[in-house]
Image 1 (cartoon, helix red, strand yellow):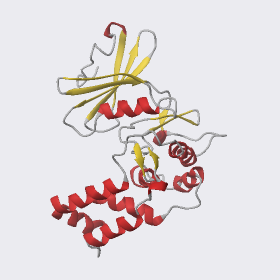
Image 2 (image 1 turned 180 degrees about the vertical axis):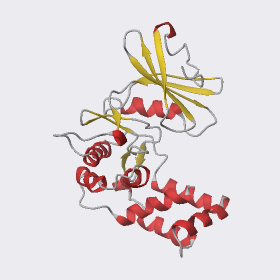
Image 3 (image 1 turned 60 degrees about the vertical axis):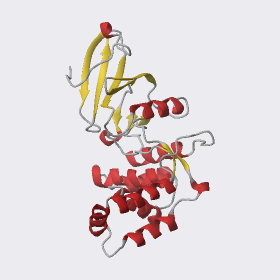
Image 4 (image 1 turned 45 degrees about the vertical axis):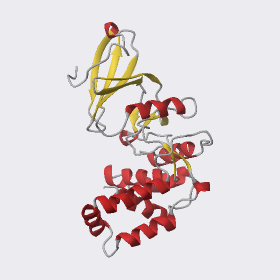
Length: 265
């Protein structure tokens, strides 16, 4: 059993626990473990220090909100104690999309991810209160960084956007930010490692702690980055575009999120 994990008895009946297997993938500041019980039921346990990035409580809230709308793990329990957060969820059978191997008669990885993202973006948002990633808020965070971390921002600009000034990039952001009418529910971290696939179909969307209302290209940009930069699956981008249901990527909207991604450091 991974000794980094401190399994809370308040959430789990430890007397029936058979094994706890650490999952090495995922964020470095989180411990993730598959728990298997004597009745063959499996759960996933996430743990992190309270002071580290993100919030497992936010993830639990979003999982509960998404439950029965799109496929996500069900929350078994959440607990914060002794400076740690603990989140227990149902186990999802399958593999992360980045490990998916297309078999005869199955759709391509990119197409599956495109269909899945369209399903998320088609969700109604009238009663959604998760709005941390609205375009104006993202721009405000970049603007704050350009003041508080001026030298780091300038280094990032010189590396990624040579011959541009901070003012020019801020003007670009204001010009190409999505309108209120274009906003949708977004996953918030739609990489190929955060979609579970089983038998050629999406089994669940996971790691939804940053999900909420934003520009659809918030997800599209990161998925393309995931396919081209993190997993070397550039050939799947065209399939993704087809599965998502658009004719081509909007390069200005992609650049908008590249600027955001770069200058948020």
